[in-house]
Image (cartoon, rainbow, N blue to C red; front, side, top):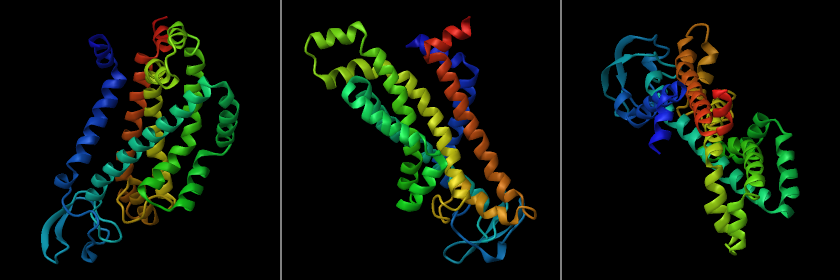
Length: 293
């Protein structure tokens, strides 16, 4: 375990990705203290205020307080700085929950398809059918059918990722089920659920973890695309995609309304992808041997 931990720390991509994600998680946790005002509060006296301007802001109780618009305000008078900070919470939750749902469902289906030959043909043909549909179009259709809520957006983004996880786990299980330790467990009349849980799943965890990071990065981008198109979370929920969607109308006059949330979105996706690449290099023996060749 210590050797693995040292290898993880020695990898530059893992250090960079984990550091950026650590900062973003910290920002998400302390957003109420970093945010200067309520992200949903509107002040008609401060519509489209430029970034860096100091003035007053109307609170929900009607009082006015001294306030600096570090990132300006939008066309509803909402503080973009506070909205971007609180949007970090939504973005990270969407990425995390999407990855967990896709790994849980896809991992279960992949183990069943790889271990039980009778289920393999049926499940994999269904997965092939899902993969034939473009992921973004399927997500748009699901959100339109289920409604725009956090859990529906997570499900809509996770479903197109499930076939990829299923195929990955199935390929691993097809190899692992022929290993001597699995055959020994079957010879000892070990129940099938125990074999899958104790013997096969632990040996498939490393590729699953790596795949989960890529799914999380894809989910962050997809959520931003859906929100930008007006098909994601409701407009009153502060997400980076919603902020950019509302700011695109006045992009030429107030480009900061789009650029500021984009400056958070780009390093987030980059950090998750770099973390996934680093974990793949360390945890996947094939890549480790290839890198050392």
